[in-house]
Length: 159
Image (cartoon, rainbow, N blue to C red; front, side, top):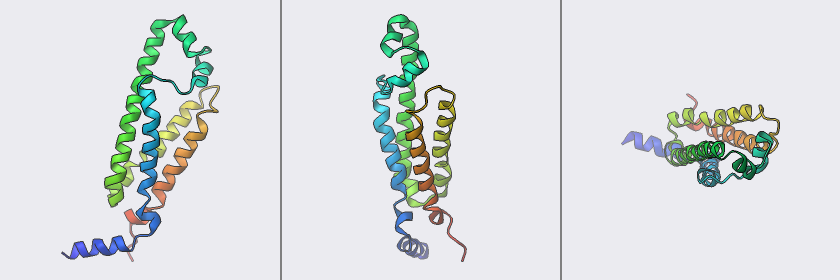
């Protein structure tokens, strides 16, 4: 009974940016979900990137080497399915454990900026990264904000 009262007091004392920080990860997950659906269905939404890497358009790749295109499309669609899973877990964990203030969720969500930083590192190996860097940087900054704003919710001061 006393712990319920302490939890109620803790929730009442939460600052608004601590209380609603979970929405940052929910939004990242929702944006990622929207982008992942066409990816999973095999629709490439960044044909300029494909052209800068392959030296030809997607249609040119399909015409010149259908077997390689099938391999490309298989891995591309598989990446989209992975993105759907990533988005799903971001949404679910943000709405439940992260919103409640479970420490494990805060630690687990450090994967989000690390994931996008890894993507930045991977994209820097390409000659043309201009289309990738701005959204990746936005996701990195948003995820860091979503982690740092509610820090005291997850790690209250001892005083």
